[in-house]
Image (cartoon, rainbow, N blue to C red):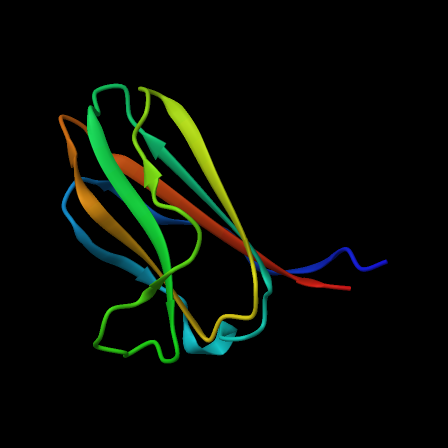
Length: 117
């Protein structure tokens, strides 16, 4: 039975107290295709009132078109609440994007990835 194997991409804060829409993290080339289990944590601070973060994938980290959503958007739902998205798959390129501006506060995002045994 396959399970979680080696941690390839350690839990890393990739978005720090941001509010504006835009891309904030793109998986480095040296990690492309190495991990197949990904976890994304998003927290909205105690003053946030709205906002959304998405995990997206494309065939190349420099792809200029619309990237494919991986899972559902992580939307604000309560102050000081941690949200989590788990994604399984072999992704050539991954990125974190704030798709809806965070109002009245900020958000932080952490990403980690592992392979399977």
